[in-house]
Length: 528
Image (cartoon, rainbow, N blue to C red; front, side, top):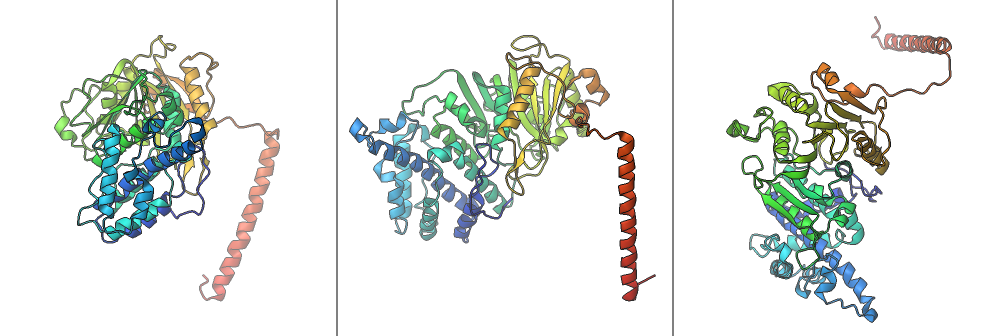
């Protein structure tokens, strides 16, 4: 996953697969780790990056208020910051103080005091920040060096927030730390463009939004427009909106704290629980209007043998060796009667017939739950090369909010979409996202989206009978067919004559090359 650092960050807009400096930052931070255990250093560096995030946003607003003193602005008034969903940073917690004292042997206590002060003045962060930097086992020289390193990056100013720089750096670091600890696992970053596509297609603008494996809350925070539309106050007196409720669960404790941090910083109130979603469902009675998720792909150690009779497996017991259809059925279980879901899964979920997965998929199709399938291009994901797809499910597909879609499934093949942002990463452009979302909206009969029509090689509205003929395999490429080729105007007979002549010329050239190679081999004493 680690990539060579680049001298300049990629200009990717808001959908980019990379920020540009995470790999370089990781290499520098890892060099400072020395012999420190990765599991220990993880909390040190991630906590400091988070504190820098808070400080960047605070300092940017502080500088803005300084220029407005003549208009009555007060840079030392906490309410000036809370009104903008920016956390108030008391004087003893400001980054300039930490930077100035980075070389002092008491720097650990200085950092702990800063974390304590921020939690004290910002109730939304209570219990979230790490406050154990003064422990004797932590090398204070390396701590100071790490502070110097983090001082040189910006993750919390307005431009960085728009790119979700904190989330990207955190996710990159978490993955690298997991690798250093020898357990890479399934915690990889969900690309912004994939999240944006899910959001644009589902339009979760009102109701209960749920992510059963929320990671760093990327489904809630990566779309700037989504966040701005649904800010509810930062827990420090901001005005609340009642149009959306957020529910999530995350099993990894460090990632769970990050999820709470991400929501709190952006002024979103959410019920984010810590625990194993399968074995300790913290929202058992929730019936969500929207489910957005990127479950870890193909997890084999989910202890499914302990849940064989679980009530969530309404469409078939998922195999103990792969949690994909356990996630799918958990999502269905938590959908409201008119709820819809959009989630990422490995491509194998569309066609696998192993261990009863094919029967589960068949049961879901025949129950009229599957609304749309989207095949994604490769190289989108941050630290996995496993090909992925998007599933869209709907509890009620009869004529209601949209047209009656029963008996049909929309297939979209987006594998040729996107652009390369570097040698190893691709992103979907805004135009790509708009095209896919518009196609889905037109197909389900939304107003002002135009008439839907099948497009060879891109989209197809397939009947259940067609799906049955394909054995309930849901791979879009099976249904959309080949893309229509433009007629170049050259008559078929003339084209075949030209191509045959070209082939004979190439065969003659190949024969000459073979003869030359054979002659050279004879000169070297290796001829036949």
